[in-house]
Length: 132
Image 1 (cartoon, rainbow, N blue to C red):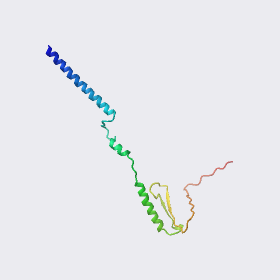
Image 2: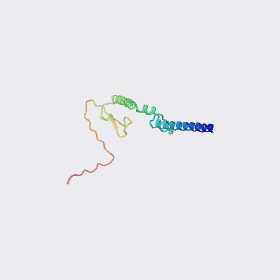
Image 3: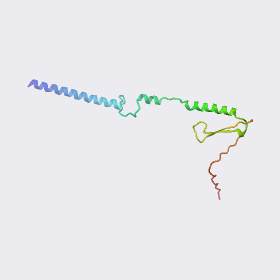
């Protein structure tokens, strides 16, 4: 009977150790997951930590600046080649490809000139209301 008692006691101790170890492993895993130390994502649309850090780095984009400078140089060359006079004025709609309602007018004058520009719309002017 003594052998049977020790055998059952040994099995119970081994079972408790295995169960305790599994519980400890599970708790450790949960703690690491909550602390974001051990990150595994099942979704594919979540960014990795390294990608987030890369995205947060400050960076200076010169893409539009370079394109604007090129277009400005092009328009300056066109202005130099333009004959003098209002009749030779050149109008460019959306000159920098950023704003469709903008425009650039190239006019070459022999002297410094004050310019007045009137933009006429395609709808009649709204009536003005006067105080009675």
